[in-house]
Each structure stands twice: as structure tokens, then as C-alpha cells.
Image (cartoon, rainbow, N blue to C red; front, side):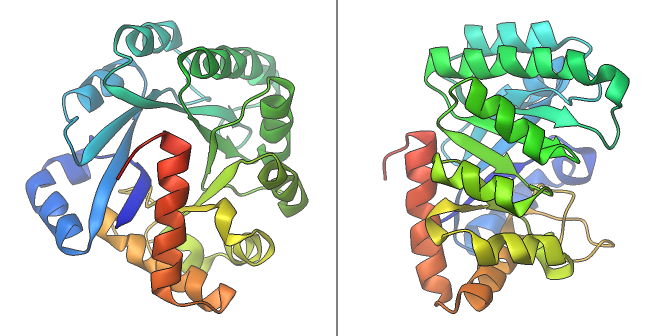
Length: 246
């Protein structure tokens, strides 16, 4: 019962062969995929994909906030079709210090909406992990998915103590930072993701949901537990985070 808590199935590299991609995911044991919208048009496309296996999370890229008010409205109008808010957050890699105040303001609006609707929030925090965790704590966020977290592990540990969870992509195979994150966080704080079509096992690969197995195997190796144990715990973590039942 694998759960990919963060993918982008509307990306043309995936969408053009979505039937094959999802058949491969099912064959690999992937029970559910959360596909994330980034912007108004993409979020509307995400809503059209929702079914029993594909679930929606609507958000916006922090480095391009054009139309974010439309995304807020889409979430408010479609609470039954939206399982999470995001990805949203902060980005100091593509964004800049000059835009940070605007990023923080929009991030807080999405956090408050997620809380009001009792939805988890999926957080993008590239080069801004510590600050993103601080903002989440200030705003009283509880059900949090830190997507592909690349920041300070000490800040991550503080987030984990508050119940935040950190989703691990297949790119862990090439990332010492991700390996350190897994090593220092409890298994109960971890989730699986692919970020398809990005963050595959190698930089040259086009990622897809079936590759959550790479994350499982690396976590098991680092934690010295069986892959089945990783699958069981991350599955329970996903149910708790997203409010799902078996």
C-alpha cells in the first residue's frame, strides 16, 4: 500500500502517457497518488484527474504568485475534491530576497485556509526550509507535508516534534542531505513522494509514481529495517496526514 504524496501528473512528460504511468504505478503497489497543482490553470487540470487513486492538492509556485487568489478560490469552491492545500511555501532559489515578504504573506493565506478547511498543507521550501518551518509554527499549522525538504536538519527535527512530516523522493539516491534527513528523523515523521516528473533516482530520468520504491529501499537501508516496515509505517503516516481511511 504505497502512497506517493507529491507528484505532478499534469506535466506534459507524464500526462501524455498517463494511462501507462498509472498502470505501472498500480502494478508496483501504489495505492494513491496526490497530484499537486501549481497555479490556476494547472490546478483546474488537476481537478479533472481526481478519482479513487488520484487525489488533488492545489497550490502555486512561490516564485510566481500570479493568480494565487484564483487558487485560493478554487480550493474554497471545491473542498470535497481537494485533499490538501499546496504545494505552497517559500523559494529563495528561483525567488529572491526582494520578493520574500510577498511570498510569506501568500504562504500565510494558504496556511490559514488549510486550517479553516481542516486540510493538510504541502510545503515547497527550496533554500528556505528553516524559515518555512518557522512560519508554519507561528501560524499554528499541524498537518504538514514538507515536500523534498532541502534545509537544515535541526529545523526539520523541530518540525517533526510538532508532527510535521517530510516526504522523501527517489533523488535520495544522489543526495547526502536527504540521507542525513532520513537518518536523523524518526520513521513516523516520513512519507514517500516522487515529485514526478522531477527528482527521479538519477538526474537524467523522467520520474513517475512507481519509483516510490526507490525511496522505500533507501529509507529501509538507512534505518536498518525491512522495506515492508517502511511501507507499513509511511502508509499509516499518509492516512493520518491526509485524513484518509483504508
